[in-house]
Image (tube, rainbow, N blue to C red; front, side, top):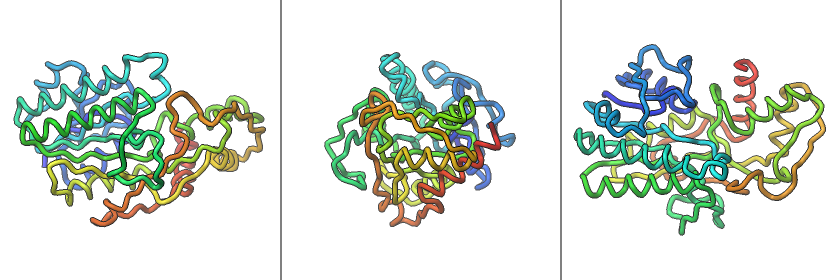
Length: 306
């Protein structure tokens, strides 16, 4: 099977490319290297450097494949308040260009990586796929939900099929942002003190990138609807203070924890998140790591890499 992976030089994208190639897929990576890195590229994949915000680039390159894995996106929620147009340009415009290129070039299948943040501050935990109404609280979340809606519309208007995955916090080797990366960076700068955003009681579910990529391919293989929507997450959650303790222990440090206060880390931060992944489990997927073991495994990788 021949595929395109947008964002295939990024953290999750490069792991997905590795998995696809190991399964015998022919892979073309499309990436502008704004977040991705050339060293993440699999040598067996063809690489095309370009920006999906360029509609003509998409029309010229998103073609002659069986399925598009669309992972290219701006992923830092915290940038939204400072750059209000960023998520619109990077995520909504980019996704529309991908879909238009698929329509024009008669590519019928798209796999899209969405996020748990589309649920907003959910009142049902673990949160199932049919939870609603969906009320995003960040510009990033709004862009992901907009992308989902646009994909659904294209599928129903132009006879396409889609697999949409709403991720918990994905962690693993090659990541270059997020709480683990930030805590390591802060402790290397000051081993005696660790600034922790919020009050430390925020709780999130974490999924190892290997489990995540496995889930994507199980859903693609078993999902038979026109639009298939799946949560990907572990069965538990960890609070921020516990993560700080795990990072400190892994680095053999005992820093002072300095909390910035408030019940959220930043504007748009979802205070509590845990996804119900029963729908994927019912068709054969099972994660190897829970949240804490995924964190520990990731810390080992990051401390070796950086």
